[in-house]
Amino acid sequence: MIPFNPEFHRQIWLEFSTMRLIGMPVVLGLIFYLASLGDDPTKTVGAATYLYFIIVILWGNFRAVNSLHDEVQENTWDFQKMSPQSAWSLVIGKLFGATSYVWYGGFMCLAVLLYQLITTEAGADKSAMDIAHLFLIYIGVGILGHTAGLIFCLQDISYRLMKGRMAMAAYTILAILLSSSLFGTANVATEVNYKYQGSVNWFGMDYNPQIFQLMTLAFFVFWALIGLYRSMRKELQYRDGPIAWLSFLVTLILYFTGFADEGLFGDKINLRKGVIFANALFISGSFVYIWAYLEARDTVAYKRFFNAIKAKDWFKTYENLPKWILTSAVMMLSWIGLLTIGPDVSNFEGYYIFLTALILFMCRDLGVLHLLFFSKKNRRAPLTFILYMAVFYVILPLIENASNPLSAKGWGIFLPIPGENAFLGLGPISIQLLIVGTLVKKQWLSKEKKVLANN
Image 1: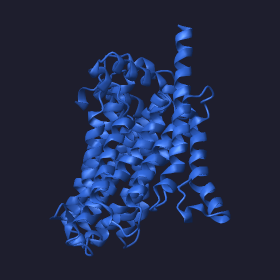
Image 2: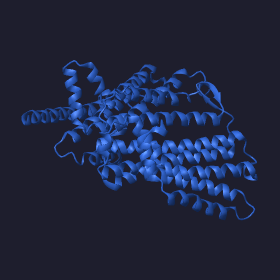
Image 3: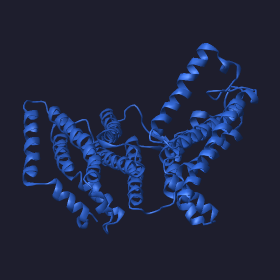
Image 4: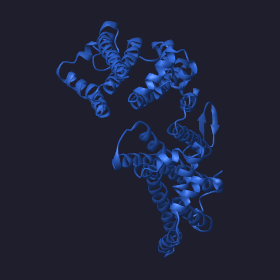
């Protein structure tokens, strides 16, 4: 519980002082006084809204990300990891303790906003439901942004993605972009009072848009907290299986699947199934790239995984199963689902060839990714892989189309090309995949031999 959380208490002592306790209400009070001069109450409402955005969304995300980073830089994080505190205790302490002063000012803004909406004409066109919806969204968006910022920071620590202030700036910007988009959506949705959309159809049921937005936010806040908890456990050297990740992935796919309303497709059942499977393929495929990009650098984890398989220790195999492999299994099931529907969901020819080529191209990319990280000089592997993606999927196809458009003839060299000729559509990428696969195997065996020689 928060009141008995030692990390939360520590953060409170760090965040608050007599001057800061007095300073926040004095500064905010002065701004609200200046905004209230005149006969327009909307100025005070606007001031409260903008100040909440600046304090909780901008400053709050900055504090959430940098609080943990500062402890790593000051070499105090290792001492905390060795303390008897649980992962959940550290999560609550960091999430709500490090941002406690931010929320101290944020709730003052919300109090002024609530007072203005209830007592002045600024809230005359808003019902109690509108006001409650707005406040819950504001608070939820703040928590989601802070949680996402801490997750980004923990992933950076675990996988050593970037160094220095540049990394923290990047993660802060990502958290701010996430929060800002949701913050703006809440404002617009409440302002128009959902007059242009009476209900949201999800899995054939109609929901009040405000209720559905709150349910959606609660869904993502819940999984963000689970993700932060699991990330903290990993940092504390606990090993958890990928079941939580699989559960999130499946529920995320189901969430977006619910919008494939039967009424949009009529009697075209296969087309609706195609949209659902394509959605699952896109989501799982995107996460395959993300997790492979993160996990390919940890060769020690791969060795634990392969050693567990050799020893037929299935529990350790489960614990060390890379998330990109598990996500690939979901992706392949989605791909099989698309194959079983048949080409009647689309008008272009070469349906099966195109889908197969798509998977082969992804396998090639994953092979190149691991080849870069398994190499001796892998410090520039992340940037090199991003450059590879740009060259192979943007620059080379543009050059090829401008000079000698083989793609028009069905040659799938740089991109999956729909066509009836399996040799032209699958041949080039199959050769590329064979070459990359051979190089990856050679690189891995060479790495293992060096490890054995050193031992």
